[in-house]
Image (tube, rainbow, N blue to C red; front, side, top):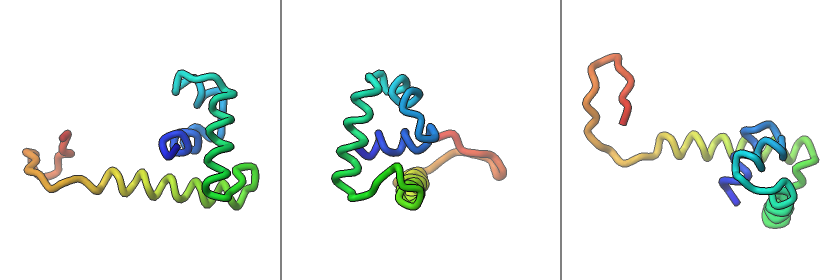
Length: 83
């Protein structure tokens, strides 16, 4: 469910684009979104609730990208490591 919500938010609330990128029918996505609303008690049609969910998704995505195990990355100073 977390991945569905994260991708839905990233696609700007577009059910069609999100369903196509997930390879599912739009009705399936609607059902998933209804389950997400039921679990977290937020209404995605409400602007303030959607804003909170969007911020939570962005925070989760940012945390996930920076929370990796320490490992040696061979890169010269100023280069962006690719690992």
